[in-house]
Image (cartoon, rainbow, N blue to C red; front, top):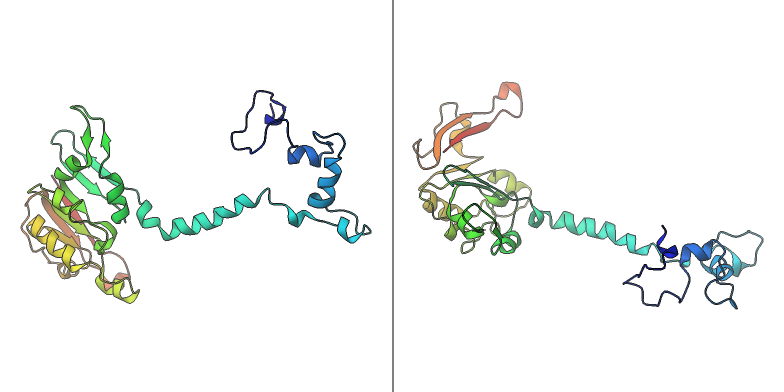
Length: 252
């Protein structure tokens, strides 16, 4: 049933009572409106609907440009642009909890400080009661460092300070030279690198680590160590063109 035909329907957003005024669709279909002394349908068609005959007086020609009934949809483009500019703070964040051990692998995507602050007080139902964000961080043993290790992506108090597992390790998907080329600033940020090195006892892998470019290269830490059980990698083969550089990690 159309809402306009439903006597029980109440439009909470309407500034007028139900018996006052005429829906636009009804007026355009020829209804005279609630005031029978005024042909609201003719008035609407003349001033807000159109198009009308080209032979009509100037004031009677197409006046549809005056209508604003669909203008609210124009905000969609602006919202899309804002979302595009703020996409890092709308990033999907995943925390994988291993049932047997309770250990957590944390993948914050491109999350920045706004994300971290938004989830700091969240709780989720668990087998032994509610699970808080601080509890997940305390049990995190593997961290995909957020947003290429940028300055505002991994907070100290609400992030690193809460990651207290002695087995913590981290991966930073960053090429510092590329970040400089596109004017992204200091990525990864030196203070975050220093804090991670201390927190993980050196178990940090960066996408541009020099040892990854060496077919016999080894990370600066021993494996197994902490949550990292084994590391395998392959350098880029110039003969095969771009691509081919990868690192594979076994996590416990």
